[in-house]
Length: 211
Image (cartoon, rainbow, N blue to C red; front, side):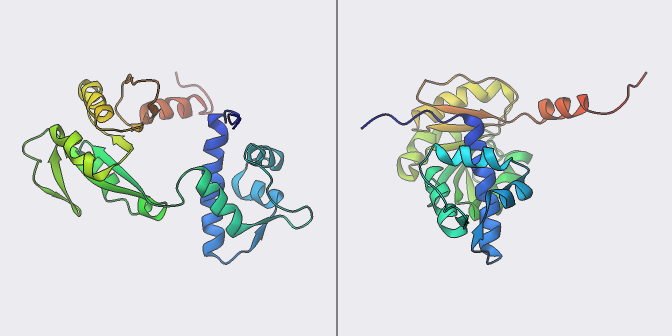
């Protein structure tokens, strides 16, 4: 079988945007959507929408548009969220605690199944419906959980050592909130989320200059 053309990361990001809107449309009872309607709803140009879908085959029918349910299911399958994905989280601080309690993750088929920390004052305590576990049990616990997705919300100095443990525990993708660069093997994918960086970029766009 020929290897699939590598899909650009921005395309995958836009697919997630399309899927979120399709979820909303299905909940509202909509049956079809056109590329123009997708542009109006998401701000992503209709031609870009069609190009993004073209990486994965034929979609829609000329003059009719796209069936909301079918398109939603196909994009969910492309992004591998057609069924629930188990997620482990390391770092039971304020941000980690908020993410564990965020019900929107379950709505989009991401289920945090275990939370870890290295603070003995937290280990053993209840966080929402989960017990905070010792980070040194990562590999042991994930042998049962089989989670390949991890969320990292630890302080920068601890990020690399925890990342190494996550890789050994079988993690394949990591969403990194730690304000530092983490190094992983080639077969592991990292997405970095830095609030300060995003705020700095937004700050650049403020009108006028302060003296």
